[in-house]
Length: 328
Image (cartoon, rainbow, N blue to C red; front, side, top):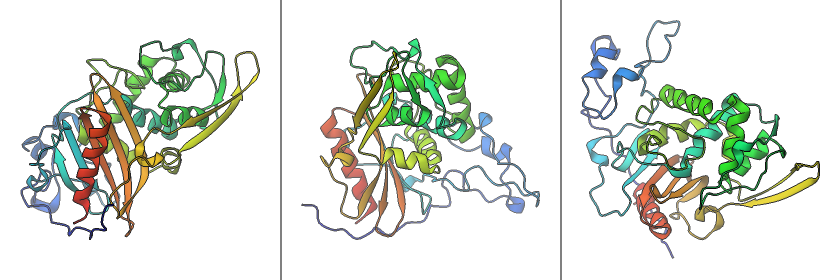
């Protein structure tokens, strides 16, 4: 049984941390950003949000977790990349290979869900098209068929709970007319969020050499998604039953069950934490992946990421290990 641990003391970000510069007038310029030693291509990232009425620009990272040398993971960890982000203190508690480009597998669906909630209408009635027929071996599906009619909200549950690649395709075609057009929307949104080392080619994460991201970029995407109550509700759901019209007008009822071990009780977070929900992903190329939201007793929230663990058990073992760094 895991013992109760004391919440760790926060350590300040060192003055030399990325993004933390003191410039004349307190304004961070685009020219200064390009001189930073950073894995990102800052020529593609806007330094500021829009100017306010005071004509004072707000730096891009003013409300984001910023890594420092203190956060670099130096212990043994089987996963290729890992990180824990403190959303309250805006701190990266620990990280390993934060900026290494890797395949995200079905964690991709976090972006698909974000776009559907942010720009779509959850009450829309969607007619499933042939693009939802996915025959790749091992592909996870929610079981919808061409001609089925579901609401966008039902498709989102089918996307995130059983990790339905077919639901992702149905959402993409409904919103933008094609998988390719939706992927363009995904990439535009990633760039807007500052996820400049991310490139998507589909809404579900099936393998493609041009479909990749980083642990830090996934934090940026998941952090944006957590701003929407509908997203929080969906990822926090353990089981969902969708009642909808089938291809011949017949009534169809499907129940989808979560596969995330923290949601099913097959694994538990450290005593001080409770899960908000998250998204798993697994392919041969990506390995076993997981992004999670969690909250401590004080109400502080965290995002944690594991990419390319060697198997499912190690995925959760590694996640437990990095979550332990939140508390003493």
